[in-house]
Length: 178
Image (cartoon, rainbow, N blue to C red; front, side):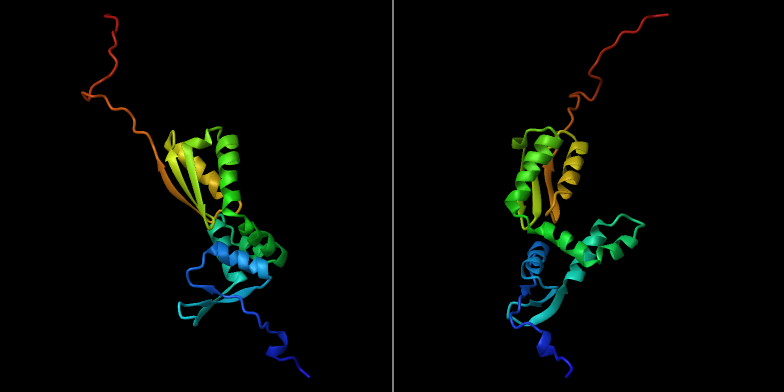
C-alpha cells in the first residue's frame, strides 16, 4: 500500500503570526526541527507558509557579495542550513555583551560606557557619540557581523567641528618680505 499524507504529517502544528521576527522564526525552525510552518493572521486563519529555504534565501541574498550568485546554491545544503540558522539562537543579552565587551572594548579600544547597545529580537540599536563618521561606520559594520544580529539601527551622533566665530582665519602668520 502506498503511503498517504496522514502517514507522514505531524499532528502538532507549530505556527507563527505575520508580525513574527526573523529571529523568532529561525529559532522555532531550529528548536522544533521543522522545515516550514504556517503564518496566521489575528483571527488564526492561515495566510501563508514560511519555509526554511525562504529564510535562507533571504539571509543569503542580504549577505551575498555582488557578482557571486553561486553562493546561494552552496547555502542550500542541509548541514549548512543548520549552522546558518543556529546563530539566531543567541539571546539578546549574549549579543549585547559581545558588542560591548568584544567589539567596543577589545576591538575598537573604546570605553563601552560611551555607547549603549539595546538588543531586541536580534535588532541592535546603537546610541552614543562617535568620535568621527569613520569610527561610527566601523562600529556599525563590526556589530553587523556579530552572530545573531539581524539588523543595526544607527542612533549615533557625531561632534560638530568647531567653526571660526568671524568666518575668517583662526591663525595669524607672518611671512618674510623679499
